[in-house]
Amino acid sequence: MDRGMARRGLREEWDWPPASLLGGLPKDARDQLLALGTRVRYEAGRVLMRESEWTSFVLILLDGVVKATGRIQDGRDALLAVRMGGDLVGELAAVDGRPRSATVTTCGTVLVRTVPRALFLDCLRRHPGIALAVNTSIVTKLRVANARRIDLAGCDAATRLARVLHQIAMTYGERVGEGAVIHWPITQPELATLSGTAEPTVHKALRRLREAGVVSTGYRSIRVDDLALLSSIAFAEP
Image (tube, rainbow, N blue to C red; front, top):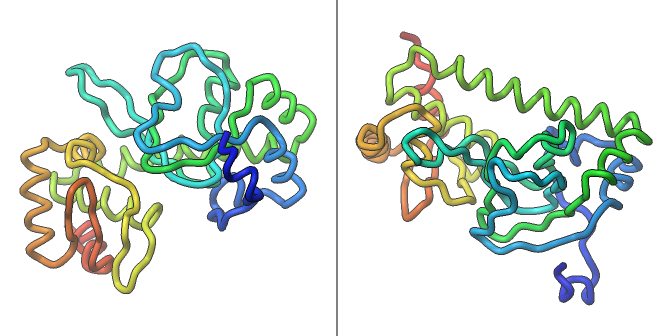
């Protein structure tokens, strides 16, 4: 636990997005959920849970960003999802008692509440409103995953990459002028797995987007300079 923060007085709330679990709960229900478990601070690059391991605790993300990855047949890690403050992580294993479906790693400093499975399930039983919100959150994640598969089907590689970048910027980016800044490190191999595109093709497509003034790239970082132009590229009529 971050004892230094405890001595200074812990911050209890952040500006969680309304679409997140914490942001969408009424205050009374949110307070019930946030009373569970132990508050912990993790630094960048910390693995919080590993794919296939038999653990069942739940993480309530208070602040920061984590990424969920899965191992594919050739041994690489595929980026499956990104979760930010306000989201719940690890609830599938807590609900069904099966092994973890992904590895979760911090992208920068992260604050969480770590909740044992028994406490989490007891909370769901005692508070139907929280249980409904958690179930809705799980369904939303599955719908988003399905929509992404459908959205990328039948597109050429450059369009798939543009759509992935647009979705990341709109969902997780901080709007700055005509663009958006993505405040977590994303690698080109991760973009390749997200868009179902070979890495050399991603390199070429990103170079064309840079030359067109759509994005700027740095070490493990991407900034969208013109969201409207990126949208027109991603969703142009065939």
